[in-house]
Image (tube, rainbow over all chains, first blue to last red; front, side, top):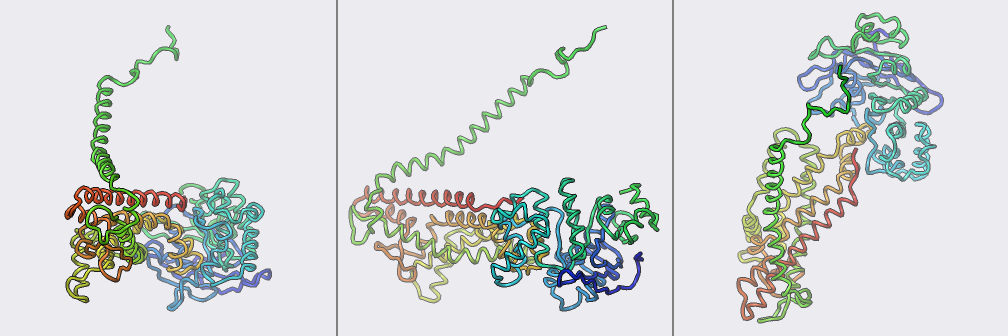
Length: 279
Length: 301
């Protein structure tokens, strides 16, 4: 059981299957601001490798803001500010001199609405990470990466005959899997997912959840979800965020093994939320 | 007891509209249609007049010969047509890179007061009278080359002053339409900002950018005042914008009308024909802009 306050532990989570290991993310005293508005207050937690950590809580309590601070996307909003420490395997990603572009190559993100690049084909979408970041990559290697990523996202069989068609011609669930394939093509160490299934129907949602269960053997996964049942189904660790009242910053109330959070939480607010008394 | 059946006509809702609403309906429809017709009248009558008077001036000679050595009838406007094309092309080469890069700065990098100030100045520039742009270009070149200088490229510079703000505004609008979640998708892959712009934002906005440029070109292709003071009047073909005067359709039409010389009617005919050619060029550019847009547009969800 992870306590809300605790020291950052650097665990090396090496998965023997791939060369790159999934890494631990540590947050220490993270405070997030939009200009003067204090959005998220004092979050300290450890996100373990090769596990799915779900961030739950009602609307506006800062889960997405916190998620975006993990891969330095929060600072892209004009006026946004981060205080505190976020570490990837012990190294502070907000240290002076750290290039946020490098951080984002190691910590990938999948968004709520599928957003494949409309000007690119399916093949180019998956290879976008390679095309946009590295220099010239030989075609053979690109082919291999595209196939591996599409297989990893359970999309290969459905699109292998139309790789040159535009990415926008797929269904919602397929587009989201395409975005996941795009994210894993660059082989990040951590995968952040911001409500990845909220725009999808139940069948597509199930496919994505199965995919997440499989991906966790190779990556550290953090998923923000509005859907408590999804958190209960798909995650190993759950972190509950809450607001005292509107206008106040969001806080991390409790974090622990999913089963414990849902059946025997230690905080009253957690118990109220998971039993549906508010939300 | 009477049972209420569904077949009994309802008294709650009167059938159809009341006569008063119908009257208002018809009146407004007539007024709006009439306004539309009134708005169209100048346009249609203009095109009709220009066509009626311009067609007699059109001939093979009009498109193939210049006016060198011609005193009466005869000769053509080939030098003017080529001049218009050259001057407009050079103006585009100057304006398009500057305009699009400025729009990229304003939309992707600009922040706060600097951006607001720049946007304000660009808006002011869209209202600059064209003669002022011409005088500016003339004064600039006079500084370096002495008084009385007339060059094709001076006309291009004058037209650029008019064209750049239009390109900036339309490019800015198009870049704003590119949804932010596409930029975020690129950032999340670890793409630096400049590469996101060149590989994701610009390709997505491509059709709109081209359309904006073509519309800006259509706007300046018929400008007369700035070219009067910068490119001068000349009778022979000149394709070098850096060497001597260059005729163009707008100034040609003005000149033929103002100084018709010996064969008055022929000169007037040629002036009208030049005007007709200008209208045709503008129409072709607009059609081309629509076709390009349809061909290259990306469906952004």
